[in-house]
View 1 (cartoon, helix red, strand yellow):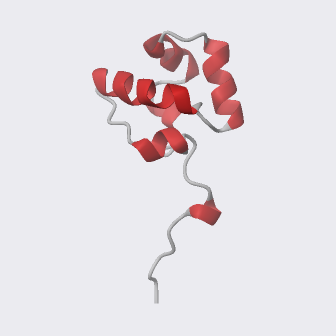
View 2 (cartoon, helix red, strand yellow):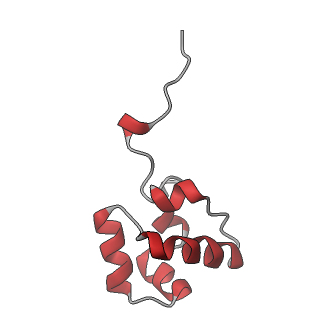
View 3 (cartoon, helix red, strand yellow):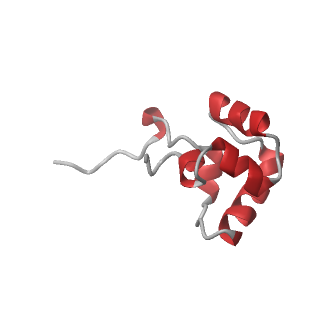
Length: 77
């Protein structure tokens, strides 16, 4: 499982849809687009925490992980 994939942390799109009371096709479209609509982000955080998944604000903005071009630069010397 990819720790940066929020959908996988929920157990897949069907399981996530069930937890959120959304249609599986809706959650699948979020995954395909790589984004969770802003009006659903608080719901994802709240429902995730209810079922023991510690979801951060960054994870709902970047549910498939932060794009490389936006990742913080390392201080490797």
